[in-house]
Image (cartoon, rainbow, N blue to C red; front, side, top):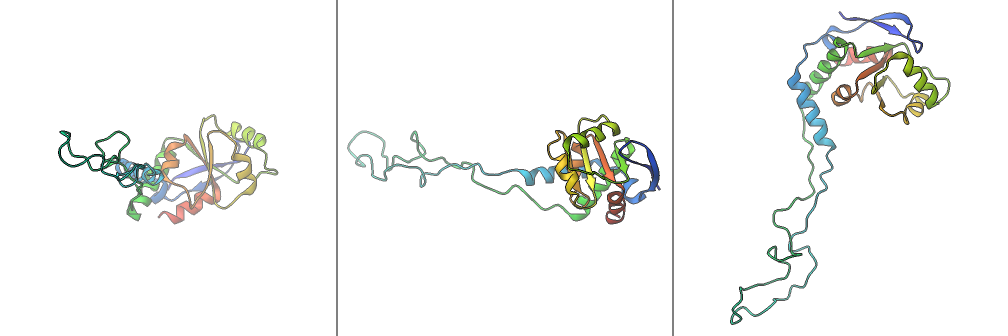
Length: 207
């Protein structure tokens, strides 16, 4: 069973915490990590690219010249894809790129990501994100004492208004709750700072 030190905002050890071996000591499956990140990014795609067909572009529907006798090729509409400013054939249309990923794969990827972070020394457990006021400057100073990583993912168990207000303008810092944490965020951010309550919640919920 993995045991980690619990620290406070002054980077002092205030205790220890036993984590679930099924969640924080699982086998790291790189294929699951890839599939989970691919699934997340597909859901983030806008899919708003759109082109107009010959029925949607502006232009008269009048036949340009008579069918026979001119010596020119027959032409029925100025909106034909063969003409400049005509419609587009088989162009992109708005679509949804998201797809469903098996729940077992999603949970397995989360376990792999958490295990990898703990194994690589990129995960720390803090006793509580206690801020007396919602000040960005104060939070930045506290985070500076804990580590020097350029990007930090803060994982809290429940909504923390002071923490949310204090972290929203910090570059490279993102705050999520334990129920909203994703494999993509765990891999994107260099260091994960997780509250003790959130770590216990994940240990129970991802078994």
